[in-house]
Length: 164
Ligand SMILES: CC(C)(COP(=O)(O)OP(=O)(O)OC[C@H]1O[C@@H](n2cnc3c(N)ncnc32)[C@H](O)[C@@H]1OP(=O)(O)O)[C@@H](O)C(=O)NCCC(=O)NCCS
Image (cartoon, rainbow, N blue to C red):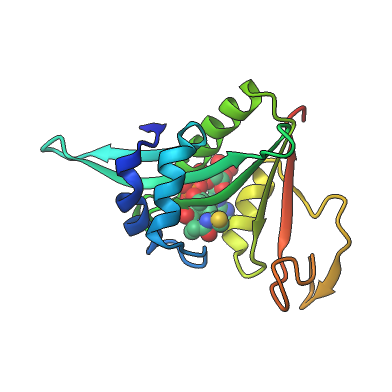
């Protein structure tokens, strides 16, 4: 089941994020800010065990740009390793896209590290375009936006155009 996050979800998100290498992890305060102030665009996937206890198994943290309301951004997306390949990340993205489309967004941005081949394959399958409109350099055989996040932090910048 996928639902919007509530403020009390931040600790579960923080615990789950520890299983999400090579994705970055944040301080608890960042997860707390997102689950408190960005609930419309933060989603949790959870399962219920035989005792009806719910457990978070995936999350998506995103937001809509304050500067340009047509731009949305996915900051973090993670599914617990034991639950991958079951379509959960696809469901989380679909929930996010539905909300941002309803709110008038035209583009969704996100970045991935070049080492994260799984995420690169996943976002490409989801219709995101690599480095569109960005100047790229070929580094270790990969087209990257050099120093995107500071010196030596080269990234792939993905964009999805919501009219596609
Ligand atoms: C990337 C990630 C979120 C995908 O989650 P998931 O729930 O396994 O993805 P889905 O099951 O929805 O898969 C969707 C599609 O991507 C493909 N895919 C998923 N994992 C893949 C892999 N390891 N290699 C190739 N393709 C893969 C699936 O084949 C599927 O395509 P299909 O529908 O044609 O079968 C998950 O691997 C993850 O949490 N990784 C660690 C955190 C991370 O790197 N996040 C992204 C960067 S912020």
